[in-house]
Length: 363
Image 1 (tube, rainbow, N blue to C red):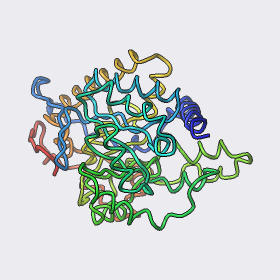
Image 2 (image 1 turned 120 degrees about the vertical axis):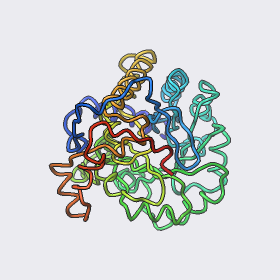
Image 3 (image 1 turned 45 degrees about the horizontal axis):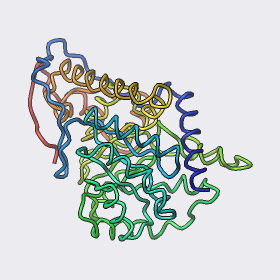
């Protein structure tokens, strides 16, 4: 049954990707164009650093799948793509491995195909400390993602209905493993209040995982006989809204959810993300064109991201947090209601073309 559910998730996620390449709230974020701000491409470095973690690039393949023969083949190709492009990669939820150790290879293939890369294991918030350690050991993981998905569990026919223990258990896992812990929402967003709570729990990094990409409430509703939770489609905050809400957060944040192109990556970095994760777009690329097509897509994105930094006069991804932005539309309304002054973003560069500073690591 678990394997069937994992295969259903892949099928329904790809169907969503085929339907929603339209507008999302990243389109409410615009860079102010300064015609003489550009720098030389050779001066741009895509490396990013946060919470003691160093990545060669600020783009990563975010958690997707594992637990069945088909999803194991997908993970094999994702691992190859990560190896060939140098991007970090996160495993899908490893709950299936704890229930059926025979499917371990559908996850460990990520490390087998990418022996020297940065790999993140992935468990849910109810995992025991022992299981969290086993997940890290299986993948020889460099970090551990803990995914939180109360909305998905609520809609999932066989889902969890007891959430009170999640926060204390996250704290136990964070204290009990030897790698950095990153808590990741699965597409409904982390509020500023939640990010502050995560810091109190000992979590090192928050992956905001906002609305705009794969909608797991919609996926799980598609698995229900009556599809009676349709009204929860679109629940939560967008990734752009979460980034604005998390300004001044006590821990570094990553951005994922609804990232459609390299401009969205640049927007997320400019709004304060230390790295940007992509799942659905890369999954569809892989399934439509194979691993070669995915390698080409990631390579192109990195090349174009470097071009955007060159255009914007940013030597590093962190420098984008000093580039002028205009926030408009529904995103501006969200900020007004949450007490966020969007005007401050429009003059961050100091008001002069070509103000090129280097900021280094974010934290």
